[in-house]
Length: 283
Picture 1 (cartoon, rainbow, N blue to C red):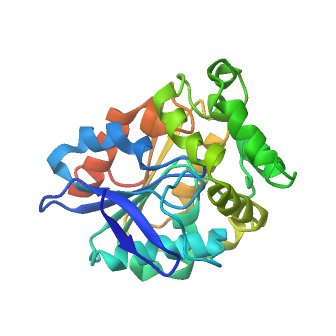
Picture 2: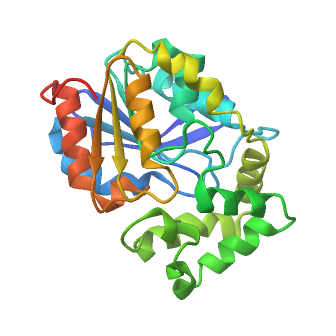
């Protein structure tokens, strides 16, 4: 897998290639780029898909010694990743479960050519829902993230309703993905430390601090939300669509937070329409 060097360290990524519009697909904490695999397949040649594995705990390439990431510096790291690849102003940035693109818009609005928010932290929902609060509490207990990672390695425990990844999706998250995501957190103390430091740096006001920037973001935006999302309130999707001046809203049935897993074909179709401008205007 190729990687780019950044001030924080190397960032591994996959690139579908081709001359189409570049689309950077960003995952959330305790996940990696594989969460987007079906969306990338569905988009095919309609987009040049770039899927970085960000240092959220499920990464495998070590950061530079002394690097500590916060939500703000993670947002800037996404912009730096795009800079390193020479991606232009037409680049579409897509995020699911994280909220960092909202912060990137606040910090560097000119870097985000077009914005897709697909089921993310927003407003006062931070840390988000039961899954986010579980991670937050685990990060504040010595050994808590390691204990949680080892618990998630037990496959039957992954299916307990309302916990872990189970609360994030309408359908069971495939075991091969969870195996991959929790392996670094189980085996690598440095990877755990990155996630712990990141989670401890979260401020409850982080998302509220981006509202004014989103209100003035004068580029095309798309908001996609699952109607059955138990972590990210569906009304937040509608509020974001109202807030962004050039946005449209797509709501999906039988869909939770992990839209790339619950409804990949429908998410890819919405992104494809957004890229070529064929979708209906307005929220």
